[in-house]
Structure formats: structure tokens, C-alpha cells
Length: 260
Image (tube, rainbow, N blue to C red; front, side, top):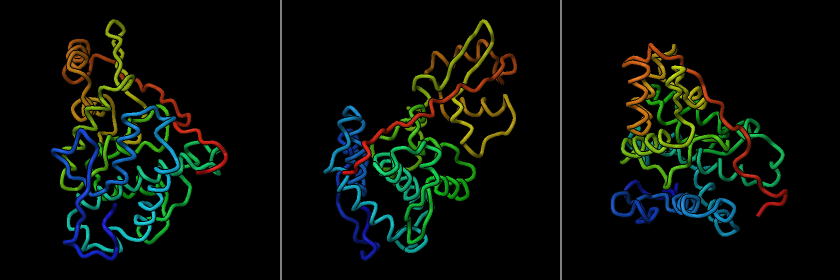
């Protein structure tokens, strides 16, 4: 569970992470990690159940009570605050996406839904904007912030931790770059496609092809595709037209109208 608002800064609980992270990442957000591990290992229709919904409600209650603004002593580094906000976005996305009362809303509507975070009211959109303000030159954070689109980035297999944030950012970017449809190349037509989700990523050059050239380094495709891109498009991509590949904006989660 998230560190209690009543705990001292030195009283972190000993918790478990997703099975394949245990040896390297002693996560302190075991509830969220357990839910994410289930989504990584099981069919999504089976990963969400009443027990996990109840467990996540307790985790969300902790997120609502305190955070880096209300209890800065519990978040001694900027990385710790960023990890808190990322985990809050992921947890709230899971809860909103499975809320029966919101089953008729599209993802854009879910992004505007008010949520309690750190003793205040925010939203998924607000959390993304806060992350962009706190880390304006770290666009890879946006790859954790799929608000529930079917075509958005995959959820990470475990909660994010401040002490391993850089490592987790690298792994998440690699997972996204290798996911189906994130990068496409029509070499004969010299057309390079990149997911339209990247329009939500901040801290990148505003103009093409420089923007996509930076993305090739930050969110790398498989080596074979990367080599083919440079062969067809040149080192700075000047020989190709860059196009945005549409994202499936349908809901990833389709709950029944009754909640757990």
C-alpha cells in the first residue's frame, strides 16, 4: 500500500512487486503492482474482479488523502513526486474505466472526470498537465498515461517507483516502441508512420521531421525497423514524409452498468 499519511518518512512498508520485477524492484505500491501484474498475465476480462476493485479502493483512498503537495516530507525527491503522480493516473484510470456509472462516457469524458488526489480535486487530464509542468523535458512520462484508449500505450507491469524511475521509463519506452502499430514504414513510398498518441508527448521539437527523429531515440522501434528507417529516410529523416498513425480511441475497458 502507498505510504500512510500518518507514517513517518522512515517507516516504509516491505512489500512485493510483480513477479518478474521482484529481484530488482522492491515496490512500495503493492496493491497497484498486483493489479497491474494481473493485467499483464491474464485476459483483461478476467483481470478485474471484486477483490481487486476493493483493494484498489483502499489504495485510492490513500492517494486522495496525501501526496507530494500535502506531505512533501514523504516525497524527498522530484522523482518520488513524479512516480506518485504517474501511479495516481494509472490507478484512477483503472477505477474510472471500470466504473459502471461512467460506462457511457468516452475516454475524453473520463479524462475530465473529477478525482480526489493529494487532498484536492484533479482529473486524469490535470494529472498529465501537472506531470508536464514538473518534468517539461521528459516526454516519456506520457507513455505511462494511457487514460483508457484501446490504441494507447500498454500499462506497465508494475507500479512506478521514484528510485527506479529512469530505468522504468526506459523499459516502458522500449515496450511502446515495439508494440504493434507504434512505428510503421512504407520504404518504397518513403512514408514513416508514428502513433498519433505521440501528439500528447511534451518536450519534443515542434516541427517534423525533427520531432520524429527525437522519438526514434526515445521510443525506439525494433532494431530491424530502425535500420530500415535510416536506410530509406536518411539519418535525419529528410527523405521521408512523416505521417501520424491513427489511434483506436475506443474504450479499453467496457464495464457493465453496475459496479463491483
